[in-house]
Image (tube, rainbow, N blue to C red; front, side, top):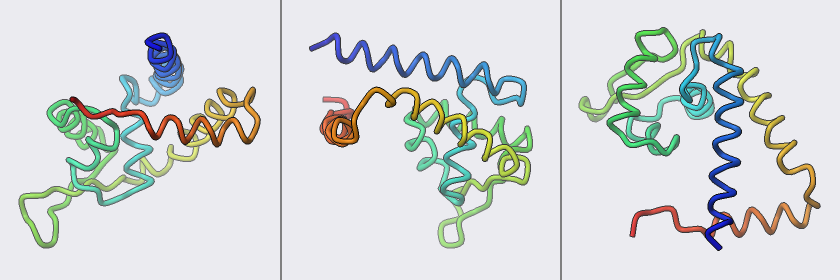
Length: 136
């Protein structure tokens, strides 16, 4: 069954490679486009939530978020009730490219799943959700 996990990894790397190539010209290489997508879809997440949503360790994600703030992609605001938390909001720059990012992500997903019937897609979704992704 290890071949299934290898296949999932290969699919993930292929999509990331295509996405990085597509968006590098925007300054969103090295998977930075994922952060923009998540921040636009859920504005106001605190930095830890954004890190968790992109499934990157928090130290690396925080460093990337800070670079993206410096690049004009995000704005950090203190949380209204807990001043230690910083919430991430997309800037106009991020919101302007979001439709392109989302469309590319949707096209990749549609192509990847195009060989599956609706029933197979439902089954695949259920099976993937059952996979354990936390460390033992």
